Image (tube, rainbow, N blue to C red; front, side, top):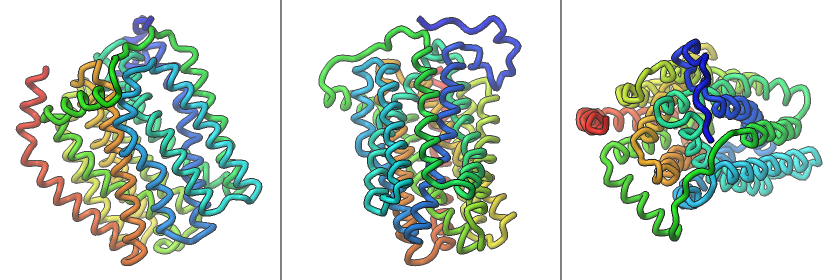
Amino acid sequence: MNPPAASGASRLPAAFRALAHRNFRFYFIGQGISILGSWLQQVALSWLVYRLTGSSALLGVTAFLAMIPQLVLGPLAGAWIDRHDKRRLLIGVELALAAQALALALLTASALIGPALIVAMSLLLGVLNAIETPLRQSLLSSLVGGRTDLGNAIALNAMLYNIGRFVGPPLAALLIGATSEAFCFALNAVSFFGLVFALASLRLDSSPRVSGRVGAIFREGLAYAWQSFPIRTLLMLLAVSNATAACYAVLLPVVAKQVLMGDVGTLGWLWGAGGCGSLLATLLLASHSSWRRAANSVLAGALVSAAALLALAGSHWLAASLAAMVALGFGMVVTNVGCNAIIQNIVPEHLAGRVISFFTAIRFGFDALGGLLAGLLAERIGALPTLAAEGVVLGIAAVGFLRRRRRLRDALQERE
């Protein structure tokens, strides 16, 4: 069963109202531990790649392989998810992710790691994440007993990710300097057990399942997403935003070392600044009393991201680069989380796994494609011109999407 919100819910600030639900509190704590570990691994892996090879192209390849399975496998994973009990399946996937992190730690500590193994481990991580991300997202509504607090739960879930992004990279930089990349990978392996314990402690009925062949289930979800103007429009905006703005993740080590003449500490501060902006965005979105207000923000977030990319491209000063990263983190999260909240609130429950998998496929898959392109382009023209080009493309696209704003708003109002 799914227990009601605690009697003390009224004493919680509006921005944290989803924490009144016991199940969501357990998930929130476990996911927070897991996210911190994941950020330690992400920063440590990017530094390991650049330390061993000095190649921005390989940075792009590893980032691509860690996320491209979301685009290729994610939509089919959504159809598979809707056929299974979500909590039990998620526990199994988290244990597999822990095993991947432990293997990466052992390979690195034993000096067996190299470009080929890094590529293979990144691909394995991507396959597991293609199942884990939509699976975890589709479980959120059951953790808060429906859709009343779903938008807030989505924003708080994103807040956890961005607190991790704010704290994790500087902490990873300290740990790498004091120990090694392998130690960060090992900590990530341990962190997954926080979420496994939380999931095992939930009081939930078995999630509803659909029957039929995976192909037919997938086609039903795809037809619904394409025929829904709000969902189709938001997914298109999401694709453009993540194919462009997310390129910073691949290029930050280059910016830190070659442009700002820094070290792993500089990289940590740049990541942390992006996390700070993202955290501010999630606080803003969590304070919204209605998910419909997010529709007023998603386009503005894309415009802010475009301006921030251009500012980062024009900066050779650490303080200015940090400010640009704050703005970039803010804009990207407003767009991504806003789209997520709207989609999850309008999609029918029996289609949730599939439609959410389309969201995560585009969110991370186009992030991967954009990162790969950015890494390859930076090899030819440099990191700063690449950032500038991505900013121009995103700005033009965001202005184009402004023309759809009124129709999008009217379509959402019809669903109230």
